[in-house]
Image (cartoon, rainbow, N blue to C red; front, side, top):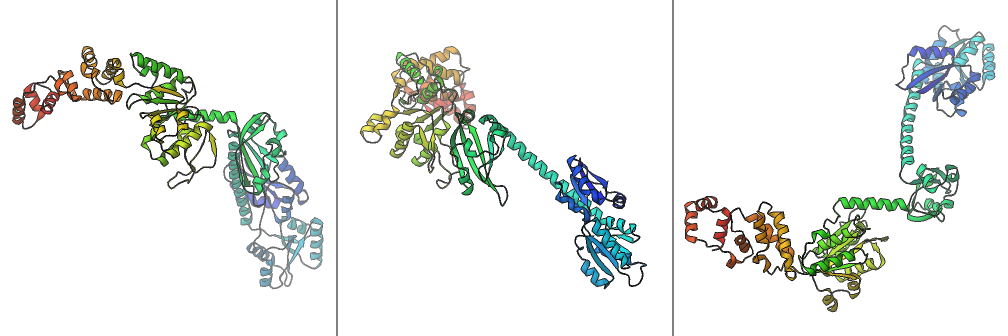
Length: 615
């Protein structure tokens, strides 16, 4: 409960009670009837006990504001109040007798104007303490002035001398003073809540925060700072910040209104990533706020970021179990790839288009110690040189037209701790080759248009269907980059070089796309000469494409091998004997409706479509 205390006299308290003033919820008004001699002591004692949050006092008691910390609201007197009081005092007085207005220390605003209107019927006197007040009242009485206008203390002393006192205040003066006191408490409550919110943020921020004044002296620390620095608050407060973070130029930061960004300082053997920035306490004072985290926490955060990237799709889904083979040649390739996966060296995957280079890259990643980290893949042939560089290395804010505000992370940064797969590596230009070589050799990356060098730890797996050595000899590819990429080499054979694997792979795709086909039928198709003898220039990708098309076209009761042969363009093996005249006649009778024509012919719509296309 917030408390308003009115330092009043008995008379003033009676007037305030007559107001029936009702403050807002959470605020109460207390009347303290005390003599003027005791105002200061009473106010200090009430404040010490927490019995007052704001004081309301008459003009002659506002001196208490010099001694108390709480706000003091003066009951203000307007010229209108003074005029009314003087008019009351003048009623029934002897002719020629002036009315004395007695105030504390200074005249009331507006008195000169009233004095001018009343033309000598009033005079003003000020006093500085009780003794001075009594002395002045005695002199006034000796002059024949018996009517006095003033505050309650003036009235009290005047009446004790046989004089008549007239109160200076109007009722609204008290109401206005109480309203102002309420406004102060409401505003202060808002400030308290705001300060509490900032204090909560300050104390609960995950990271150390230290506030230093313009001299670099520590003025405030949050709990996290004490915990990670392993210092008590007493050990930190009022010390120079550069005694904690040795070499930190906080004074220079404050004087130049500059920042310290991502500097690493060692405190007690632990390393901290630290930032500092100047700010203004008010117009006269400046300081700096220093935020820091131990490097271990930063590394944990990076792991969390990588996990988030993993959840966003930067993940390898294939494993070595997905690489199907029975041929000895392919088994050896797979075995070598598994052996290489345990190393951290760069791997170059060589093979024709469609042999499964990305499947191998994902399997290697998942078989490595980096399996729980991001797997980031990019097709280098799909992007222009400039765009490829910005994707691989990221870019700084406003580094080129259209660049994002705040810049953008590159794929090497996103792959930090994991694997980056560079497909079609033979398509990158010489400039990008040079930058890629630098990243491999230094383990560092600089964003396009940036100035900071960022350390990265990404295992590189590159792939190409071109002869990279021939490109080196022709000057298309850097020799030094070739040797950095081709540390471990995996040559993946074409499907035509391992035909014994075709039935196994074909059966896998048939199970995937033609689950409803009887097992004997799938076996017949998978082991057919049509598949075994095909050239398979598109390798596994082509085989998958054929099986998927076959699943979309064939229907129950079809000549399955015939459908497969037709889809592969092998009409000689079709085995179909289309009866052109009968088909065309029925189609004409059905008005070109193929579904109806197929029903009349007793064949499926697919078979009809195949016969029409086989002519």
